[in-house]
Image (cartoon, rainbow, N blue to C red; front, side, top):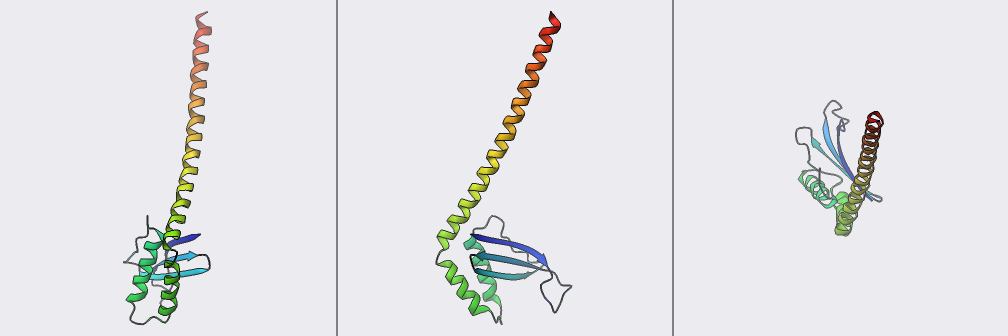
Length: 132
């Protein structure tokens, strides 16, 4: 299952007061992360896993010196081998969660509609009893 998210925090041990954005990506045992300056927040909302990989890859390639470059690019290449499958699984999971949420909302609405009908029925019965 693919998981990705971003968060802000202090990730530079040499400059602990400096805030940065970090994007984390995991698919099975393969993990990646990259950082951005706090004023360059990466937009991953609504992205597919392959879009997040593109974002991380561009960041990895942007560094003049990066001791993890080869390792990270190899991980990205490995993940790209299952790009379509990864995106499909991700979307299927999101659809399942949305459908479950929708079912819960429908159940809550039906409960309220039933309660409203009972209240109206009780009010009508009370009105009939007063007429007699």
